[in-house]
Amino acid sequence: MAISDLQFPEAVKVHDFVSPPLLAEALAGKVAEQLRDAIERQGVATLVVSGGRSPVTFFQCLARQTLDWSRVVITLADERWVPVEHVDSNAGLLKRYLLVGAVAKARFISLYQTTASQEEAAEAADRLLAELPPIDVLILGMGDDGHTASLFPASPNLSQALDLANERRCWPMLAPSVPHQRLSMSRALLASARFKVLSVQGEAKLTTLRTALAGDDIAQMPIRAFLHSALDIYWCQ
Image 1 (cartoon, rainbow, N blue to C red):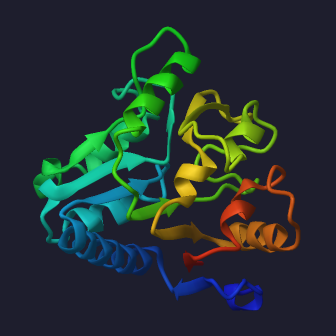
Image 2: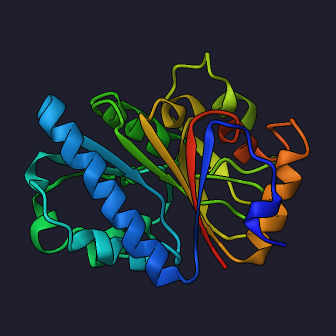
């Protein structure tokens, strides 16, 4: 199966690459272009990225892009509730691979706070995100179960986090198959991004996308919330 075999809504644009390095380089160039345009238009640009292992090459490519990083605000779509020093911290990942060199001049907003409970951490992140400028660029990933950010199927708080009318920006979430609790931006905040990208790799992701496109239950596969509006999909085998 090829990604060209899938039937996407008209608002979705698909970019197909032959290798992960080519995808990463192209995506980094596009993101830098969008950030430059935002800086020229409004004086500041906001970038929201996702963590995990697959974005590392993209982060490295983006860190080599030339723009006024001092005018960029960077934060995460989701985070594991672990200290930045922990190997699974998304903020730690960014500090190693993206927030280096010139990019260190960017303002980074961390979702993780040292608190007594996950709920208190989410509330603290929610207050910080109240100061976030409008999102110019959002980079999402997708799990094989159809989750995106940390909007996991069957997670407590999922219905509230998916509710576009709910004004809360950050929710405590549960990833059922991994050991760490999560913090996630709400669907409403993620959907507010001006330029949205879904970056995925491999045959398993095509199977997940095909299943997602065949149904409309957002709670069952939260990625569905983003597949029927403007979205650029960057994919490689």
